[in-house]
Image (cartoon, rainbow, N blue to C red; front, side):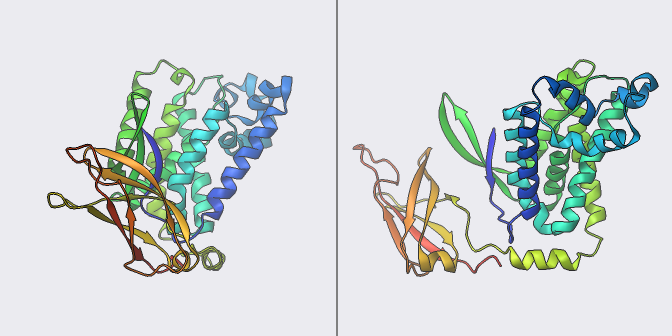
Length: 326
């Protein structure tokens, strides 16, 4: 299952999450520039349990390097797909958690989740000489917080079936709960050392994310976070939306709703709409013209259910205008 987006849009742009994504990408480019020094670079800035458990190995590193690795390891990645998977998950789930905590609290929350995930891996792999790298543990903490904050949200998920894309909305509690169970099973069944993947760091990050959330929501939001929230309020609705036509009478067309903001209604916009027709779900590009008013209906020819003669019914897409998120 590949998550595409969640259905709970944040009220503000996730400036901290985006900054973290950019920072991870820049560090990845720095890794690629190391050439033959890459292994030494990862051993220095990755989290290597043996550096802390075996004095003979730890003596090769300074105290500052030993401390820094608890932060730096979460900005290193083992390859492009490792980086892409982590940053995509952060992009999907991070904005809502940042929106709830505010930018300043969220930054400290993210870093602490990463440190907690590193400690989890360290304690359970005390003498391992394999460096642990990646933002997975910190992002797992974000997912743990999301699990508590938005359990009823839905995750638009891509499921490839025989090379054909199938889109389905999965409840967040089910998606994240299944993810956690898979991490736990992988951790318990994996060989010593995790088989190259820090499963316990994922689990530790997820659990500590839930715990830290309960603590962080008690901390008052700073004036800086409030100013950032005001400056970064959203003015657009989600680009990808799921249209759910209700059951229709025999021989009639289908109808569904599409939600946009007043700004989009005034200046026009384009959306990607996933529409269920019968047992199929198809994607349509919909152009909203400038000057659209609430209740306006767009007719999508042939987007409805298939008739006995092979023709398709039409879909009437009713535009609903919601106030700007800010």
